[in-house]
Each structure stands twice: as C-alpha cells, then as structure tokens.
Length: 124
Image (tube, rainbow, N blue to C red; front, side):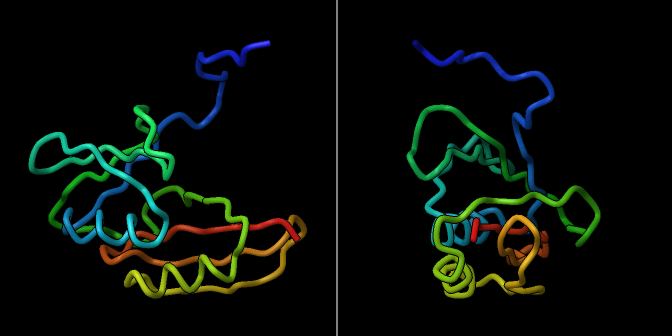
C-alpha cells in the first residue's frame, strides 16, 4: 500500500521563520539540524529536511527585525535530545529553557541567532 502523498487535513504543511541574517541562519540550521536550503532570491531560502528531499517544509524570510516570542512555537523531534542540545549550542544557538521533563518525554527551548524561539522534544 502506498502512502497518500496529498497533504493531510489540518496538518502543519509549511513553517516560515523570520530571520535578520539569512546566511547566518542557514549556517545555524544546517550545523544544528542538518537542514538544507534552496535559495529563492536574496531574501528567502526554502527549507528542506536533513534527508535533502525535493520538497520544502518551510522557509527563512529575511526581515530587518525579529521579535522573540511573537509567533507560534515550532517544536522539532529529536531521537537524542542531549546531542541536539549540544548541536544547537555549537551552532550558535542559546538554550533558554531546559531540558526538562514533561508528560510526553523531555524537551528544551532555544533561540536561533536571529532571536526566534523554537523547541525540541524527545520521547523518554
């Protein structure tokens, strides 16, 4: 049986992050999570996951200013939370909360070099 390639109703389809330095943001997300990018002009880069498939799952949009906490909180999944914490710090992100336990497992929040706050969670 082949999986249905069409988008799922009410599923998250695309996440766009505002960044203040596009090149720095691309380096950070590539170093921390292995993301790959497709440039669409000087102010936008499409996000492809670590597998490097052709489908974009989001984008980085260049703006003069980024307001921390001004939008939805994006959560990523990690198979090894402690290694992800280290990768985020090495790549230039700042852990702002955790890691901490929650009913579904463990998670932490970080800010990227532009000030966007994201979270990462892992099962117990």
